[in-house]
Length: 323
Image 1 (spheres, rainbow, N blue to C red):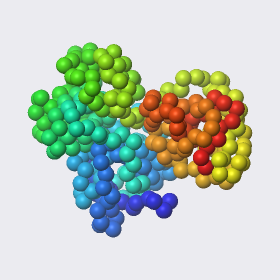
Image 2: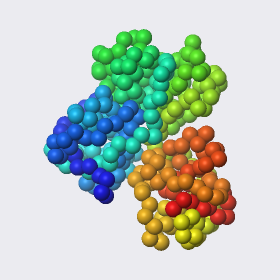
Image 3: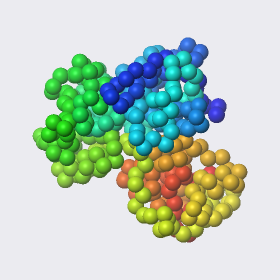
């Protein structure tokens, strides 16, 4: 873990009923690496779990990193540990920032957030505002008490830039998404982040209104639901290393990453759910069965493809990868 950074939890505070904001600063007192809106870090928790969290706020590395974590009822350990055991002054290991959700906008932008998906979009709104780029941020919640950074957003942005929509107030995403895009030119980019169902609905509405997939940018906070059952998980295929020609079978009950590791091949793993991009590897030959939620549809159908070794499989009998 030569690329990890040692940080200290400088502070924790509530952001709404179900979220906890955490400020991280370098243990040695030096500025942390710079980052851009859309970036995330891996957080190595003392309980042995590694989780990915978007960086948020104004983006000044001199002030440390700010993340915000929702209390998940279905937590597999990360959210539960942070909410119940993490304390100020505690030392953690984190990765340098990675950005698979970059903000690239020189024209008016529509930002669509739901739940804790506000974290990367809050950073984007601050950057767009600082650079004078017109934007409109819609934040969808069940109720206002559950929102993160609501007070900060209301203080910094006017009604023409920011709006909250609460389903308990009769203003749900299902009812409002089409309205949010009324009068917006389909050539203008959309950035969206939130639960899988929300993002799928937002993407569907945007496509129906004329947006191309290239203009719709999203980040997932959980892996996409598998399209097939475990019993139909696919037959055994072979994975071949382009560098050495070594080849091993990948059975239905193992991932490519697991097979490679069993045979002494180092694989850069992090989330192991197809949501972080750490293990994306170029494909030399073969047909990929993409199961990650990192790459766009265009990237998954491009002539030069990458595969997420932690979750994706092969539709061809042999898959040759650039390792």
